[in-house]
Length: 309
Image 1: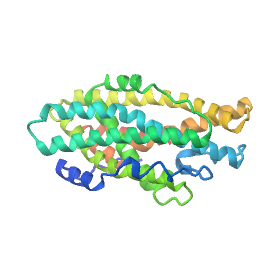
Image 2 (image 1 turned 30 degrees about the vertical axis):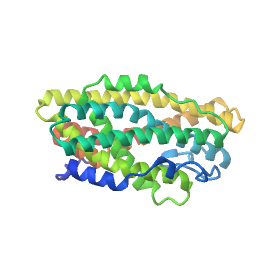
Image 3 (image 1 turned 90 degrees about the vertical axis):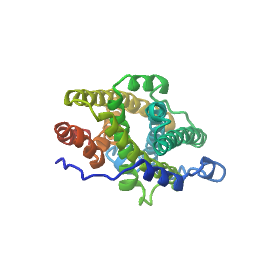
Image 4 (image 1 turned 180 degrees about the vertical axis):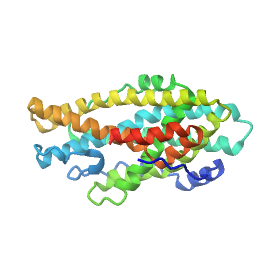
């Protein structure tokens, strides 16, 4: 993969604030009541779920695994957004009285992340009621967030930027026009994407502000911190793959042969590595921003991302 430097983005706090005010959806308008999940359809696109390679699973088992992965997908967003919320508030605080537009844009960012956390918790209850079993998840969120926030602020901001662009890529490339997926699940992802589009812009500005004035060595250290968080997440994804295998066995009432169970866990771990790591670190928007502050590291990361496909 060749790294291509990005042209100036033109993002501003004023533009992001104006776009956010136009979107402004409410949770009660998109989930609950008659807006129910259709468990007869897949929730995630095959490009993320990757159940097709598991040819020893029948169609019903593949569908259940797809839905288990979808539940984990929204849970992961909630897990991440729980530390984004305090991080953005901390970033906004030093200039509360100096730049009204910046302050309003960042506080809106934080408010929307809090709304997303509420949305994903509501989905979790709806999913469990319809799917019929509870699925174990990595965490807890407080411990995960504490471990992430222990890193340099620029490291954390790079991770958040990675996630924001990752969200854009998933929705635009494999969800928006996919007619096979449950429409209710697509609706949740669409509304999430609408606000994350502004968040990608705001976090680009945060990364630039945090990098401003830092030495090359300091920026390089922050990139190392970003990668450390990624390695930590990779380990957690391996555990989540094991949890998902257990959930699939309970949902299907089937105990897989050891070699089959190992195959399911391995395929799903690699699928999650692409979903949460590779698709973000290889996104042109992320690489463009990283390339402005650490060109050599951006070029290296563009090549390294292929290992997570």
